[in-house]
Length: 120
Image (cartoon, one colour):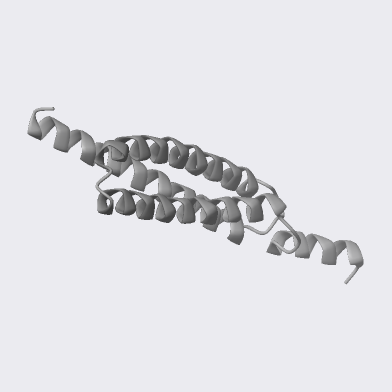
């Protein structure tokens, strides 16, 4: 087997590096940690009776979480489109971003339904 054929085989099998995929995975993991942190911050605010800050925390969390999720999805998709590059980290990062986005949008929908049902 010649070196050129071996190189083509390696690229087809997805060997090599995909830094963009790794970045997508890291940003996706940071996004999940960010969501956990904001949940804890909101719990502390409730525990301290700082109800007036809850909406501020919720809005800030939603905006930042959406930005992080969309960035993660974009990075992941770009990394998935790279020919011959490994796809595992890119796929995982894309999945984390999508899960975060669905979670935030579900929370916003839930808040809207509760507000509509309670007459706010």
